[in-house]
Length: 428
Image (cartoon, rainbow, N blue to C red):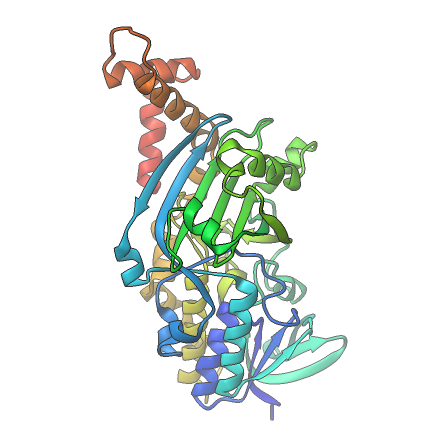
């Protein structure tokens, strides 16, 4: 007889959500987390979109450590001297509470406590080495040679899937599977944040950036989120381009991002409070491991469940939903847990937005990490905007003439722009 019904590896959004659901279903659950306390191994800045948590924690927004609700969302291209942005401000966003700005260190601790309150046993500061198998079936986990048994295991260990790799259930990560994320938390008075970002004390600003000003072939995106009295500023850098460059480190990119003229003034006089780095899933379907097996399920970042099309960046909601679906799968099959019964997990994921989104936008990373999106398009947009708004007493040109000149000046043919733009729009 097993010591636990289910062991959940990782007390992030996926693992803690699964543990809550399982404990509420009367199961004996062990939730194991490397960080002490939960959240200390995470970097995400972060915006939680959606309301999946209400399925296990009704009225969760009343007690969760939400910093602000998103009322202003931007997507911006940064060239060396310019910022070209799509900016959307709406009180409807806050009234609908679509995006919640959180700090993972606080949020993960809160969610893990909810799992504990529901009846799960929470153990922190423990690094699981690998899954333990008997006759092809997972029967528990191993840590430092000690074995703890269970009828099923949910692997929600995050973007660095060392347990899956050590257990022979997925290959080592390649540079195309993940990117490198760096985040800095910067202290600023609440009233200064409100004034600089044109928000009130409940409203928040969230923006993603394409860092088109980087040289030497480097590709990177950036983000900035306003917390209550801090700002989360970070980058996500392409590992293969960093490795090919060989000269530039990710913290160099972070430094350039901080010094950019349209970022510098936003964080002026801020006090650095935290600096951390982490892997970020980027590979999509091509990097996804087997999502289930005989006695185990994979959820959250460990399953590569993240999405970005340059306009929308999401992952925490995917983690929560996949954790809940993993728990539901086990609860429905608790008297007969094997590979065949656990396969219904994939059906549930396909019927949800998690796998639907990943299939709909399969290959989007080839657009978001392309030279066209990150280098050529920002330069063309910059040229067009400058031509439109610069006044020198000369006859004005039609937009098509301005665009054609901008395309040529950036070494691109107009037909190539149309075909690249069409491919990008199809993927987005």
